[in-house]
Length: 67
Image 1 (tube, rainbow, N blue to C red):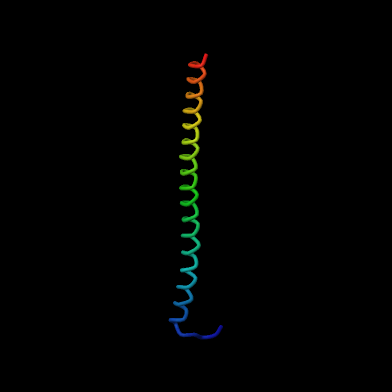
Image 2: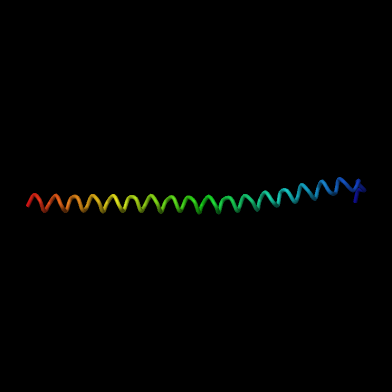
């Protein structure tokens, strides 16, 4: 192995450590994004359900008045 100054080994360890941390934080960030996307999707689905129920109740009331 080539003999290099000690600080070059420290720099290489720092680069590898930085890469590992970057991969870990990327995974964590993707999990967080997926969580927020799913939560927003649930809010949207709930809003659509409420609108359908309102429309159904409105059409039911309209049918009983017309009869």
